[in-house]
Image (tube, rainbow, N blue to C red; front, side, top):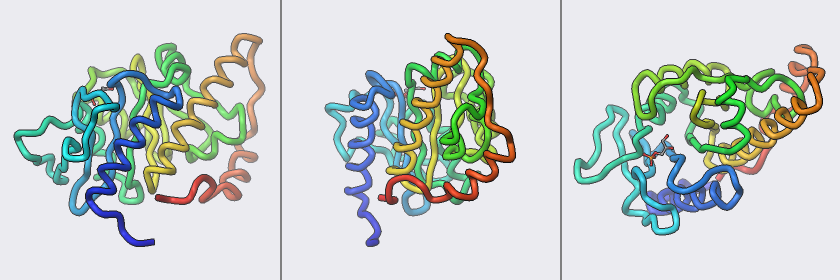
Length: 216
Ligand code: 13P
């Protein structure tokens, strides 16, 4: 697969942002997306409506956090940068405020193994990172920790992060996490759901590796 140009990557970030809102996993100017690029990352600008966002507004940031001072990267640039630094296998980070994921995050409820698809997020749970103010180094540290050995986490009183080897996989996982959150929320209305055993999640993990849309 030929490497994507800088312009194509910028446009794919904008398309994904619009996709988050169209898919119902985000609203307004909430959320942000980054994609590894050269020796750094491309990241959405802060508080720009996705309908009007232009490729040149996407900010290039070095792995040291440096960027063109005339541009304003997402307020969450710290966790995007720290995740990409900590996880060499990750190339895309999607942060959104999906309704059901955020309900569980507010209630500080991690998602347990209610459905085998939880394995797509890398293990038998989707953890909740403890609350810290948006945009802070503290939030970034909590997020990196909650993502250890995982590809998704919830952020208490805030939202969700999904990561992946490509933007298409991170977007797909975002939708799956929200589906799991919705299923768990539904189960809790009826009673206490039974959980899949750890051994079965291990079994599924072995079979599900690489599942999901082609990387692009
Ligand atoms: P930005 O517009 O700064 O990316 O912030 C949105 C958000 O969701 C913060 O958590």
